[in-house]
Length: 304
Length: 304
Image (cartoon, rainbow over all chains, first blue to last red; front, top):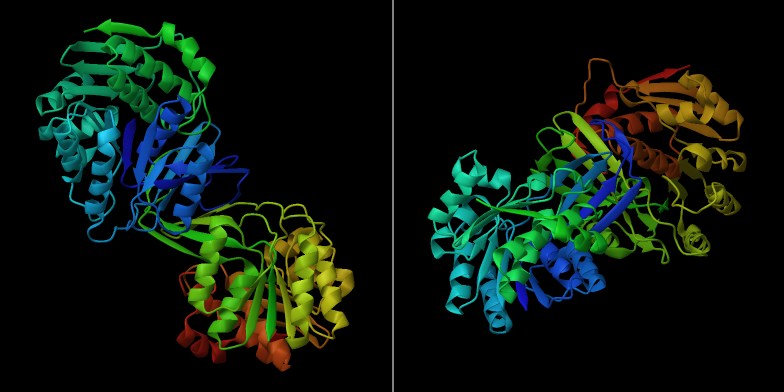
């Protein structure tokens, strides 16, 4: 079983409009809403892949009810950590090929809430193969909070994937997370280095056992103890669609690979194919199953 | 008691951002949410004025829960009509002096829902002095729906204010609503006439007993059986703020005036002062009490 932690989940709302023009009134053509947050997306993908997963997350208020309703519809097993602040929303305004995001930061949880969350994770670890910790921290928590979860999983001998950015990522590196998965912007922000390979190596030097960077259409760059690879689709493949959640699909794929001890090149090929199949699906956490299988043999793996 | 009907209410969400730039990601600085819809705003203002009012509206789903929580907080008496579709949201993105609106259209209610709403209104009319019917119709209802409410109130001998636009407004005119309150854009859309006075007279010719047009900073234009007036603040008064809900404040003021049989010039002065005091408050349905009282003697009334 793969346990995901989403400390700052959201109700993700997508509005389709013709074009977005500031200072005017828009009639929304289509509204879609679903449970959101990076760990939630990972658990949604794992559920669709037929893997056992449990999403750990706080939920409160009217948005929390809507998130839970969607998790139930999607069949995603979840543990609700009480004491969080009212669940926030994110709004994606989709117009033609543009997406404009409005992200609520989220309210501060009650005192002692992180202790409760840690307790819930602790209780799930005996049945877990991998712990995945994803996304931002809610307001009011120290940036070292994720570090404690990495330590907790290692004490149980479990691999941990940490997919966060900024201080919550860098403050956890010396606890040696099994795998971190920054994207290009997060690599640059964490290291100040513009070359992704140099930046990934720097995060490894700081303690991450493996660094798997998701670089959008440029595929994946993997710096691991067993070698360094670049995995991508041929340049002739253009996947159009919604890139939101593509990185979370890669994390889901990598978590499954860690659980099954799949060799890196095979794991990376699946992560690239599943990410691309997610871009082709309209919403985060969904993927085109046929495309996933069709793309798998096309992924090009290069050892660096 | 003043009964308001809001057939298509919303959870009104306001996001403050620094500037809105399409195709980028924004961190929301401040989130405000409240019960929305024009009739709800009218009842909120009447409640704050110390008038007895009952808001009739459908509520369903997670947004419906949030709307009801806010109505309870604000002390607004309300009757929920069961069988409506999930309550919609509107998003106002406020940046500097710009407001960008994203309006969900709202889901279609169950079959027979309008019959239930009419029954609820029928039950409230014996205790009512004025009926106010405000805003858009939810999907799936015939544009003549509001006409039936006008007829219902007249059968009880009650005055009716209809504040809607498009077909739901024009299809009800031959039932002789006591008062309609279009704004400038709605006047133009309903009549095709660019001159507000000509347009207001045209709506009166079509059946409205009185037409009170709210023209923003240009004040109010009133075409009534007792005379035609223009009411506005002196040009030297500039009220800056959020104009959303200013028209609803005017309706609240006019409903109270109809209930008390206040002469037109006094009624119009209060409507102008209360609208301006609403612009000065940050959210629809709120107003600055001191400003309301201070502006009242400054309103200029001109008989045309």
